[in-house]
Amino acid sequence: MWQMRITSPVRHALIIKLAGLFFPTLCPVCGKNSDLLNESPFCSGCWSLMARYSGPHCRVCSLPLPSEYASVCGTCLKEKPPFSRAMTFGVYEGVLAEAIHQLKFYGQRRLAQPLGELLFTLDFPAVDGIVPVPLHRRNLRKRGFNQSLLLARILSGKLGVPLFMDILTKTRLTPPQVGLSAKERVMNIRNAFVVNGHIRNLRLLLVDDVMTTGATVSECAKQLRKAGAKEVIALTLARAGMF
Ligand SMILES: [Zn+2]
Ligand SMILES: [Zn+2]
Image (cartoon, rainbow, N blue to C red; front, top):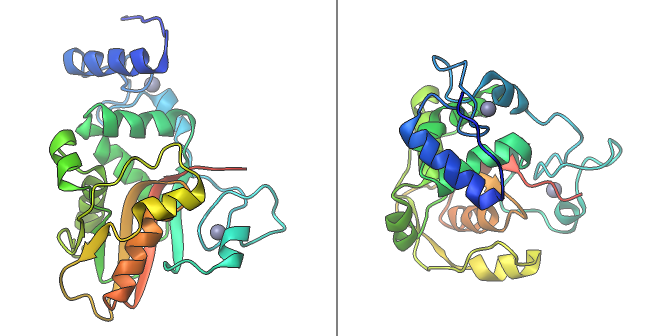
């Protein structure tokens, strides 16, 4: 079996990417032979670690909470977010974080399908349309695809709900949110999105891959509500836990 020495996260990801190109039967997260190829490109060990988070969390924004006693986090208590609630599959750490990283930054589009399947373990509300969080066209050109659109398309097909892929566009190029404080993230993304189209009185499911402070989904939800949407429910694969 092909073995590797992990030297740094960047080199590890690069080795896995190259391995994926030449040896598509290897698990894209750990590099071992995948024993679940009919079901998923991940090996059974990694697949079983992609578990749904079931611990205490904010019932509005889904932020993992340290105790069962609080049901709403401090941020949501202070100010009601523009989305009615945020649903998420897991916590952004370990194998799930690595899989999302491989999808996004190493072009492993084939991971969108199994990762999208994970979302179907959640109870979906009735909605009128699915809206992916868009990338700015320059970033879309660079990456070649929008991971949120890939997930939204899987959901739309399986749930039989229309995909509104051009309703929301990112018109302003913003610096990456990584490394910014919660406040800076809000400022950074403010007025970066524009709504084109008729969404009056519709209930929308807004899809993104990862939610950290919620600045991006909040800004998107705010614009969708301003344009007349009756309700916006955010859905992400992973929530960055910050406790
Ligand atoms: Zn694996
Ligand atoms: Zn909250």
